[in-house]
Structures are given as structure tokens and as C-alpha cells.
Length: 203
Image (cartoon, rainbow, N blue to C red):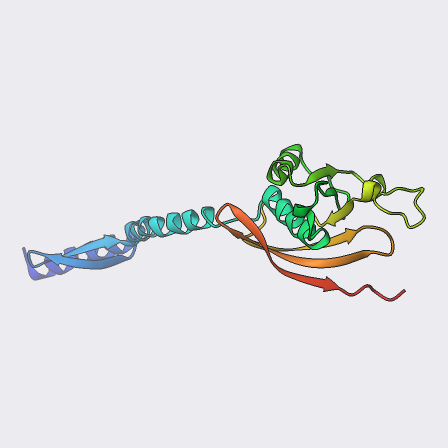
């Protein structure tokens, strides 16, 4: 083949390679240079990244969470220890009414979990409204049967490993307090790691 024909053939091969996309050098074998098209290279990089994505997802799924049942149980245990410090020495177990600050319902599954965690040490009553727990005939609007009303902020089912929850402890309109609790999950358990009393707003 003449030199002119050879040169023309190389030009055609060069244009043909360009039309198929960018060519990337990926290594050599037996002295020959191997190439990979840009499309194949992108697919290879995407596949290489999949194990890392899966690892992140698994780590997120195994992170401890503050679930509503264990979260409310932790609040009740903290409230009883604070309000009834001698409860274990008394024959009559504390009575605790529970409601949410925004009026949202607490599921039956969550209620059963809290009652189960309380066992025989605490009597638990869930109420839809705070008024259902208060003796309207009492001069200081005390909680029925000398109980304690715990009004707690809702705990989302997808809460993180730690969550702040507003809580009000109410015995009567004279004896009551508002708190901000920090709930922290550790494995399958949740505990109150910080309790900060809130100053009532001036009226």
C-alpha cells in the first residue's frame, strides 16, 4: 500500500474512534495498551461505589433509636423517681396519668409497651385530655386519686438516637413543673441523661 493510502486509512480510523466516545487508558498487558470507553469506565466506577453505599445504609439501620414505647417508659420512670422517691417503701403503688402535649394519640402498641415496662411497680392510665385526669371538684384541681399527671411531647416513630422532649409534671395547680428531658438510646434501652427545669413565662 502506498504512503498516501496508508495516511488516509489512519485518518479514517482516528475519526471512527472519536465518534465512539472518549477513550481512556486503563493499563497495559503484554506490552499492549488496553483502553476502555468513557461509558464503560463510568459503569465500572458506579459498581465500585455500590459496596460503600450498602455499608452506609447498614450502619444507619443499626443505629440505636429512641422508639415511642421505650421513650415514654423512660419518662415515666424518671417522673416517678422524682415525684415519688419513697414509692418502693410504700405499699400503695404510684398512679400516673399520661397524655400528650399536642393532643396526639398514643398507639395501643406503645401503651402496652409502657404498661409492660412499669410492671407491678406503677399503675399507668393513658388519657386523651389532661382534664380527664383532674378532679374538677377539688379546690386546687388536684389529679384524681392523689396521682401524677405527666404531659409529654410526642415522640416520633423515626426519632434519632437522642431526642429532647418537653414534659410537665402536675399534681395540682400549685405543685407542678415543666422540664426539658434529653432521651438517649443505648441498644434496646432508653434513659434520661439530662433534665432541665423550665422557668414559667411571666404572666
